[in-house]
Amino acid sequence: MKKLIVVLGILCIALFISTIILAYLYYQADASSKSAHESMRQTSSQIDEYKNMIKELENEIEELKKQNDSEDSNTDPNSNINNNYEIMNEPPQDISFDDKNRGTEVIEYNNEYYVIIKMGEKNSGGYSIKVTDVKIDKPNVTIHVKENEPPEGSIVTMAFTYPYTVVKFDFKPNVDVIYD
Image 1 (cartoon, one colour):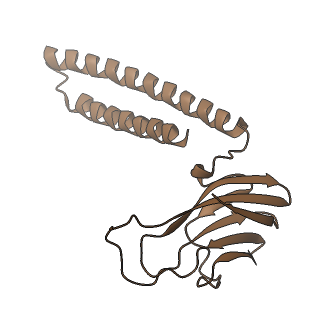
Image 2 (spheres, rainbow, N blue to C red):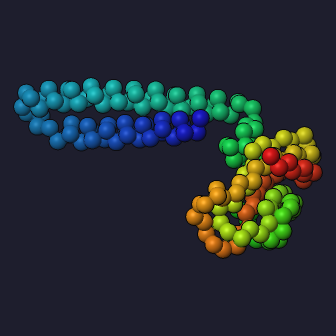
């Protein structure tokens, strides 16, 4: 939905720029010649068409915004943002946690709660952990995660890594993590 709004916005901008270019050409035309007069009439007509198209696109954008605002909260964990939680790559810089041990930590920071789900120390790169589902029954939260290992024989970073994922909540959650 948001991508569609962005695309429509870009189209509006493109039409607006086209209108400006046509207006420039309109004023640059030689008003004394017949061909210039005809060119100005056509340009004026095109400007009117572009203005109508811009109005239509603006109306579509407003309609899409209304639809987006009226939709229920999105619970698709792949969307990253929900009314009650947000899946993040990193917690705020001021938050410190023990990433070397496997487990889950809930950290309160600026009236928000960060659930950090950690795989612990790994001896190479290629490991990751991803949230696959979040179920909320306030204050209880069930987070499903999938841990991924590097494929056998793959080329990976030969250094210790500490994979984790972060889910931010706007309430204090009682968390249960399920590893799929």
